[in-house]
Image (cartoon, rainbow, N blue to C red; front, side, top):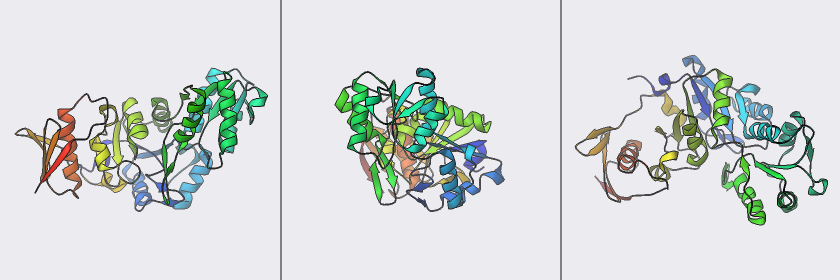
Length: 326
């Protein structure tokens, strides 16, 4: 059997929780990424983190030893600024609630970045920055409540850091939403344009999207019509993948990026059950019987095949009652 990676001409990779957590690389991730080029597979990075410019992100990746040119990085800051430029006229005042990098993207589109609602901005763009505080959120709320167009680069509720899982941009957006009762337009993941732009930039016709989050990476990749792979090095877990609603289900379940470089064990239906390798699973009502080792990822792949086959159109996350049969 061919290695999984042979089925694709490009990898569109998330960053936080896939390549690194905070400043440090996830073990084995850089080495796996460096194996793509010899296989003739292009590599692009698609990130919702709007706190740094693509050039800064690429420099960080190179410092870690990962292959990265500045143009290989497509960010939600770029997507947010592009959406903004389509919604307001050139020269419009935009309150930037986010990083200097986000403000630069706004200025590059011929818009005027401001920092206070007192300047009566036409729009607010909100992106993640670890330096944001109450005053910044209050200024955004004043402007949004006053009628300004509101765009969020992304709504990730959490972000993987070296010390664990920390609040993401979605939590800051939620604060402004709670204060104003309004909803922002969202530019980045899980919207499809970010992934489509990345694939177009690479000249890819058959990419695979890999990420650690179902609600952004996998949902967005699915919406773009691409193959998706959930990797278990960040936010989502085997349990949350199994319980995923239909729109957020990945095509592949990987322990690490290194799983791209081995054959992928496909699930097969067998006497009312689904088998992967030596593991199998059978769904009945809200129950799922799994025959296998709970530490073996094939058991979870079989579990996903059985549970998803029994619940093909689920529009909400639903976890089965699991019984392990050894």
